[in-house]
Structure formats: C-alpha cells, structure tokens
Image (cartoon, rainbow, N blue to C red; front, side, top):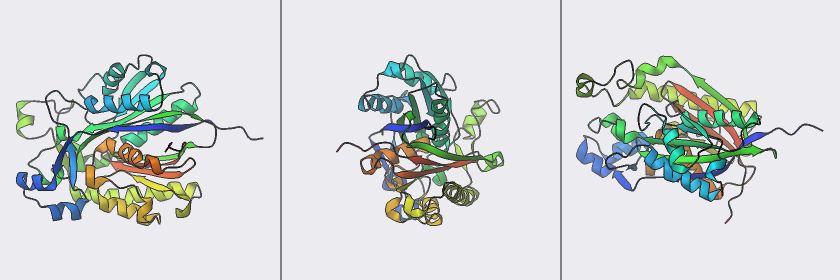
Length: 335
C-alpha cells in the first residue's frame, strides 16, 4: 500500500476591497485616454482605490484575514505562520505580515513578507505548502495584498489605467485525501528589471527631494517588452505544468490567471486549449491588483468550485518572475 502524501490544501478564502471605484470615465478627466482604448488594450473598466490618510496595505489585509478566520472557524492563536505577498508594504520594516498578525490576534504565528511582484501570491502559496509538507506546521495564512495606488503616477497614462487596490487571504492546512497543491513550476529572470521596476525608495536610491521631484517612487513599466515576455512565459509555464502532470484541457476545471491584461489571459487560455467559461476573469472590475488578483478570482468563483477540481494557477510579474501551480481544490462550498 502506498504511503499517503501530505499536501497543503486551501481550506478557505476571503477578500476585502475598497469601496471607491475609479472608472475609465473618471480617468478620461485625469489623463489623455478614453474608455475604448483602455478596454481594448487591457480589458479594465474600473478599479478600486483605498482612499484616506494613513491607510496602508494592512488596512485591507486585516479585514480579509479576520473574515477568513471567522469563516473557517479558526482561532487566531492556532495559526502557525503568516506570509504576506506584497510590493506595497505599510513601511520598509517591520513586515506588513507582522502588523496583520498583531491586529488579527495571531499571537503564536511567526510572520514575514514575500516580494516577487505580481507572482508573489503563487510564490507564497508554494512556500507555505513546503512548511506544511514538512509536517511541522498545520495552519498557514497566506495573504496577497497591494495598495498599488500608493505607487502609481496618475499623470502617466501607461500605468494608471491598469492598477487597483485589494487584499485576499487563504488558509492552508494539511490534506491526505489527494487534494491540495500538487505541483509548482516557478521561474525568475532578473535581467527583466530594466523593463519594470520602482526606481527609488530602496537602498540603491533612497528617498530625497531629487527622487521625489523626478517621480522615481512610482511604477515604471515599458509596456511592449513586458507584454511580449508575459504573453509567452505565462502560456509556456501553464502548458509545461499540464504536460508534466499529464493533464488535458478536459481535465481542467479552471485556469486562475493573474489579472494583468486580458490579452495575456486570452493567450494563455488559448495555448492550453481552454474555452472562455473555464477561465476566471474579473480584470474589468478590479484591474491589476498585483498580489490581490488570484485571491479575488478564487473568492469570486468559490461557490462554483467542487472538491477535487483541477486548477491551473498562473502568474507573471516584475523581476521578471513567473510560474504556474497545479492545485486540486479541497472543499465544496456549503450552499
């Protein structure tokens, strides 16, 4: 009899989004753009923005996590580890995960942030699953949260049309019934840094009057090379992980793609032979929320997911970073 492998399964999901909707119509009054152009290039119709003073990423992550713990009947003190995937931490240090842990009462967990740009959430799911597979940790909270509006220049029409703010969190626990994270394929190519980065604010270019005046604390993106790389790599890695696990399009319940651009998502789905109804897509409502995109999708589709469903989760981000996960969904949502 074969030994039952312990895998890390997602046993709950919750999200939190700000109320304020920044529509394409409002963007038309801010920069030289229009609704038709934005939708045809990106697929975005509106995005959520976290407004107000002293409102960091944790302000979205905390209610997402509190709701998750409540929904899964998890006592905060029973959580072993908290990983927060973000590129917009509340501050340089301490980690936003530390702030979230404190405010949610997860007093026995150790916690840290993970930064792999838009691939951060799938890197964090993979990292969490290793801790669980080791047998030492039983309850891990993985957060994907970003306040992208804090690093966006709203006079730059190339980037301000794409990004939004959101937070999501999942609970990962050991599973021995064959469900959970089955396989992962993650990649990095650091030569991509020139095409997509935030120039200042780190140790290389600390904040100064000069860096602020030069608008170096905002996202810098060269659209064409990033698009070209993303469209190829996200499709490649999704196909790669399916082939390695002998999966066909018929075997897949859903593709859960990072919501960066509708054209990149379409290209990935087309490469692995998936029809539109098998692709989670909500970029029109939220834009690219960086680490928030995949949890937003999983939460929105949660009621349609069935125990044992095969999901391919894929992402591409600054770094460049990219990857795909093969995950078997672990529960049916009570109706």
